[in-house]
Length: 167
Figure 1: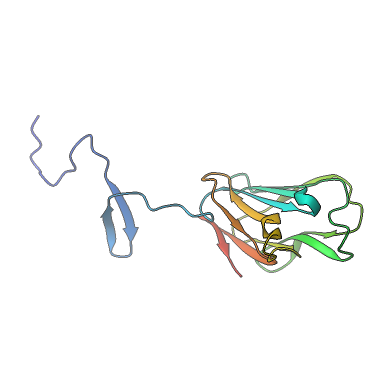
Figure 2 (figure 1 turned 60 degrees about the vertical axis):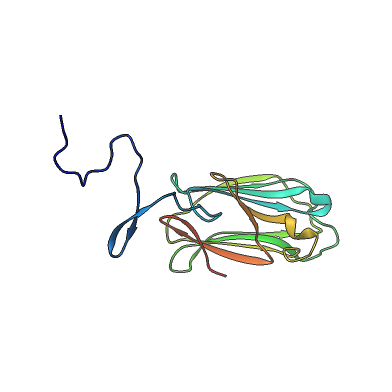
């Protein structure tokens, strides 16, 4: 059967559109996803000798954040908070807070925290801006494998499309 309306897309060809305020705009390729786009994120915290001291896995679809702390002394040179993990809801109430002291023996611990769109996830790492040691505080997008350093302090807000960097 002949198609009467030649405004139709050619059958068998992929057409991609970007939704804009003005309507649909045809695009050639899908926009690149960034480290902050998606539904599955991980954070890695390392201490002395780059040993992993804490790992966070957040699945936005299930609204669950898994926090795993490794047993041991994170970094004996630091006698104060070496790293921390805090979750707040949209009104600022603290839902979860864990401070990791550098020279204090840490026991292995695993906890699941409910985290949903609108909530804030805040991380600190005392070595997050050190030239060599900044690799000890990393965000990993578990869908596209992109990574970024977090620095000394980083707050993310969970959005419908992924994460939004607040600072």
